[in-house]
Image (cartoon, rainbow, N blue to C red):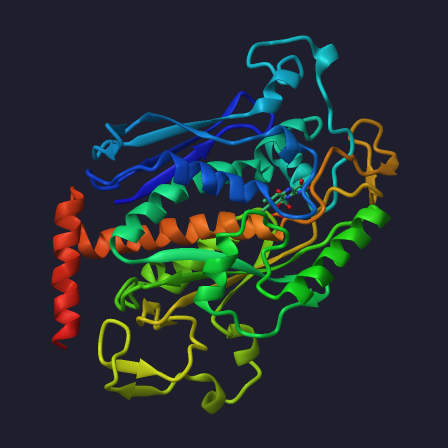
Length: 390
Ligand SMILES: Cc1cc2nc3c(=O)[nH]c(=O)nc-3n(C[C@H](O)[C@H](O)[C@H](O)COP(=O)(O)O)c2cc1C
């Protein structure tokens, strides 16, 4: 079974990720992992932190001679900012005079709920773990999952659909998304240049006014065979697993599969994807005229592209803060401000790619099994042959 965890504080010494259950014999490409980490750090509207960090994954276990060996893989991402925080966030007792308190909780962040839950007098420890710096660790193991999926012919990428009030309405093809991912610079990761400029204006407006913006990204999984996930148990449905995986990302407040939101207001005849036969479909001779289902029916992948969107609320740390209460005096004050991003939609899309890749890898390993890549691929080819002869 594929399992994964992360650990680490935003300004601690390092982030750690742990993944167990990948078959032996998968080639591990350090350059690819580091490029994925770089992609997560990009995007117009990121804060000063991203100028300090240049993430690279230091693999500690589970990989030898460039290959997975079937043992748990652990890896570490150094926090370069740690050198500025060693006295403020020591593992040992340290000097309370150096402590950097988060004196008033930020509305929209985990500060107040976390401080109440863990009985902290202020929100420093809450922020340290609730921060989306954690998502870098997911991207690192997500890169391993992507490498695994690629062996089975599957690819996962994302693009940005909306930033603030500006959205791209035209459908975006897999080829357009591939071209975007090859760009040397990630501005707002939008396939349409004019819309991307409009998105940039939204970010500029927020930068100028001390505000922040949210938006929508779409993750597309290409080459996914029919049959991943199942309707047989509620928690094994692929749509349920993907929704949970995407919703687990910081600031994601809604998840949509295919055209799920518009579908709620449309008649069935305009929504469901008619079925044809012959002329070469994906994996089988069954074909579809469109993909409103986003590649999943009944909690099972149906052979079409999987399309899942995440809706991000605007960033909660504001340079012109909202009202809050001082933890100590209980008097009204402005919410705390700490160096912050203003827009993170492209980065969240990259983190969501990792979550989709990890989820699909888990489902693929459940279906095909295998302790070595050879065994997994043999089982996968057997299934492909079964689909072809269906
Ligand atoms: C890639 C990424 C970067 C983020 N950067 C910031 C940031 O710089 N400042 C901030 O206040 N929130 C940031 N967030 C959002 C917060 O982490 C998130 O809103 C907070 O942890 C509360 O969780 P919730 O929004 O899921 O309820 C970021 C989110 C993502 C996905």
